[in-house]
Image (cartoon, rainbow, N blue to C red; front, side, top):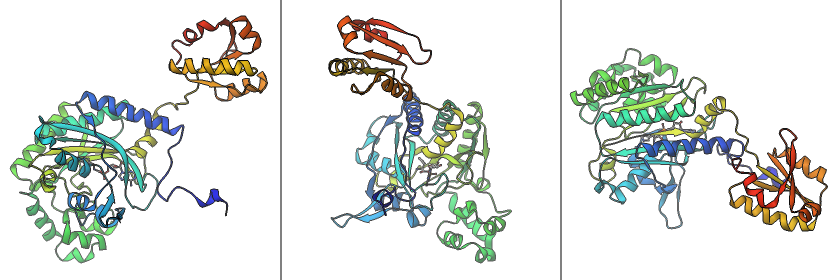
Length: 421
Ligand code: HAM
C-alpha cells in the first residue's frame, strides 16, 4: 500500500478546495455583509465544549446526543465533545460573558465546522459547516419574522428563490405536555407497532414520532391530533402574529404541523427551509425559538431565536445558479535572465503590495514556455522583462485575451493595472 493510499480524509469528512472554496468564500462574504446590516456581530466559540452542555442543551433522548456526538475524555479525565451544532455554545458564551447585561436584543452570527457521527450520504457529512445566527432578548414574534426574513434575503442574494419555508409551532411548557398526552392516547394500543426508535421516543420525547420517516410510523400517525390545535392562548397568538408578519414581509411559507425538529430546546416557532433539488437531505437551513435554553443552561430567563444554514447543501445549490468563479492573475511577469529575475521580483513585490495578483515565470525558461504557462493560468497580461527592456527602461506587454500588445515605461507599471486588480 502506498503512503498516498494510507492517509485519506476520515469517512464523512472532506477537503474544500479551489474552485469550490471561491463559492464558499462568496457565500460567507454575503452572509457577513447582510447579517451586519441587521445588527448581527460575529462570534467565534471553541469547537469543543464540556459534554454536559450538549446533553443538557440539545437534550438526552435526541439522536444527536444519544448516537452522534464525538465524545472523548481529555488527559485530565474530563468528558469533552466536539460541537454537533452552534446554538448551545453561543448560549454558553452569552451566559459566561454576561452579555444579557448589555442592551437587548443581542444578535450574533457564526460560521464554522460542526461534528455529528451520522451515516454519511449525499448532503450528509460527519464534519459539516454551518453559518448560524442567534438573537437573544425578545420574545416577540417580530424577532422570528425579522430573522426568517434575513435568511430569505440571504438565500435570494445567492440566487436561491425557489426554496420552501416550512413553519410550525410546537408550543411551550404550558401547553406541550397536554398535547403529548393527547398524542400518546391517540396512538393507544398501536404504540407497540411503532419502529424501535419511536418506541423509545414514545417514552422520552413523543413529539418526535411526528417526523419519523419510517413508513409504518407515517401510517400509524395518520389522523393524529395536530400540535397547532392544542396551543395555549399565548402560543396561538404568537403563531398568528408571526404568520401575519411573514405575509406582510411577502415571505411565502407553508404550515407543516408534523415538523418538530431534532433538538429538544425549541419552544413555539420551528422552521425549515427545504429545496426540491437536493434529494433526501433537503433541509438547507433550519431553526426556531428557544425561550428556555438560556435559563436551563444556568443563565437568566432570556428568550431567543436563531437558525443555521448547512454550507455543503447551500453550496451545491449555489453552484447550479451562480456562474463558476475562476479567479486568475492580472499580471504574469515573463523574466528573461538573471538581471530580469532581480528586477522582476522587486516589481512583483510592488504590484502585489498594490493589490494586483502577480505571478512570475521561470527566468531560466524560454519566452515561449513562459507564455504557455501564462496562458495556462489565464493571466490577463503578460509583462515581458529581459536585458533589452531593462536597458530601454520599458517593458513589453501582451493582453492574452485579444493578443494586443505594446510597450510602456517601468514607472507606469502600477497605473497600467489600475482597475484590473
Ligand atoms: P439543524 O437542523 O440540526 O439545526 O442543522 C441546521 C442545518 O445544518 C440543516 O438544515 C442542514 O442544512 C445542516 N446539517 C445538519 N446536519 C448536517 C450533516 N450531517 N451534514 C451536512 N449538513 C448538515 C441546528 O443545528 C440548530 N443549531 C439551528 C439553530 C440555530 N436553531 C436555533 N438557532
